[in-house]
Amino acid sequence: MDKTLFNAGAVDYIVIIVYFAFVIGIGFFLKNQMKTGKDFFLSGRSIPTWITGIAFLSANLGALELLGMAAQGAEYGMLTTHFYLIGAIPAMLFLGLYMMPFYYASKIRSVPEYLKLRYNEATRGLNAVSFAVMTVLVSGISLYSMGLIFKVLIGWSLTTSILFSAVVVLIYVGLGGLTSSIYNEVVQFFLIWLGLLPIPILGLHELGGWDGMLSRLPESFGHLWATTGDPTQNAMGVSWLGITLGLGFVLGFGYWTTDFLVVQRAFAAKNLRAAQNTPIFATYFKMIVPFLVIIPGLIAAVLFHNLGKPGGPSYNLALPMLIQRYYPPGLLGLGLTAMLASFMSGMAGNITAFTSIFTYDIYQSYIKKDGTDKHYISVGRWAIVLGVVVSIGTAYIAADFPSVMDYMQTLFSFFNAPLFGTFLLGMFWKRTTPWAGFWGLLSGVVGAIVLYFATPDSVYASPQAGNFWRAFMAWGITMLVTIVVSFITKPKPKEELKGLVRGFSDRVNYKHLPWFKRPGYLAAISFVILIIFNIWFW
Image (cartoon, rainbow, N blue to C red; front, side, top):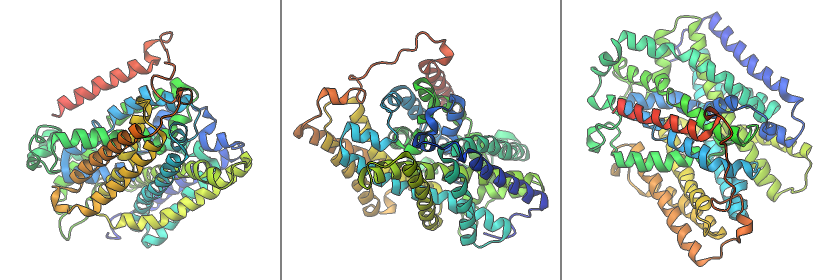
């Protein structure tokens, strides 16, 4: 990347410095309130719905969302919006309505801990290790992205930029734990919108509005479904069936319902209803995020003709190039701070999730079972150091991929898609046995990795098409192996499944509450809006 991409002035640097001072200050402010493990890892289960809802979304509003989705928008057009609509909203609603009661009511501290209760220790251990690996790989994406911005902003080397970014995240998460991360994520959410909203507005104005922009792009770039009947008619090279099964069902549900990074935010809610409403509340914001990231990608595809071409800038630079084009001094600092905030949000979310999993599901389970709260908080802080250090190494892996979004979805197809099969059968089929959960999950993860390395790239029209179908096949392997092993092994007795399996759990009743506080009504409204969006941009 050219070191002269950004011509930042003194006022831009001041804006960025003030932001970093603020997020570190939050960590110092909350440090003395972290008295128990529940405070440090779960925020004392005391945070209101509107905060956990924004944090739920903001934890996912990192490098993937900004650099990655803008890059995908420039490369594939409006088809990328499926990652928000079909690929997120149904799964977030399903999590709130059907899965959160199992998670929250059982008082578990992590997703792997549910697997221990539903299946066995081996299944929990497998998921804990695989999730820890995935988390530090994903946090490397955010760290690499932050380093990239510092490199072009200040002229530092990529290594120096990555190390500086890592230290900032290490300080504020290490001091304030999950609470620091959540409150920073709320601040970062509003900062991201304030800092990046001018781009689609200014870009559409320059290109003559929505119709003017689409008239200068390939036909398929303006549609969600119209060109998916034939994969050769759209840039992503994927059919409606691949989008629905691979992205909408397996990848979407696999991420939003089982990934501890986002589910952890709902765990911090003050009661079960607040925990259920957390992902449902977040869907309303999720549906408007494409305006912030996909449309800039479309604008970049029109303005920068060599984007993604041999010898030209990477698709990952679509958003930074637009900031450079539209933002004068002062506003440039705000735009860059918004990008840095998103990267820190994504990395901090991954690091806090990694810390909880490492402390509770690896260290406490296999190394020291009878430690004090103070001891586990100390271990948690050292786990943050470990996660950040490993993330520094994985940042260079992210640098080798042409698109951070392709890299992210590859990781999700490895780990999240099989895990969704394990959860689906575990929560809704009482006959699923402990060892069936373990062997099904292991088979799905191994199968996905084998499919990735054994299948030539030429088989799929694009990397994303490959991710969609590979995820569906990994999920299918998990389901098949789990079902077969369940019929030849012994299930758990009914009394051990109470509160963990649908049919053996008490139903939650909210009839005494007004409609606008009831998860079912809020989810129904969100789903209707989702349908309208899909018809509107058909």
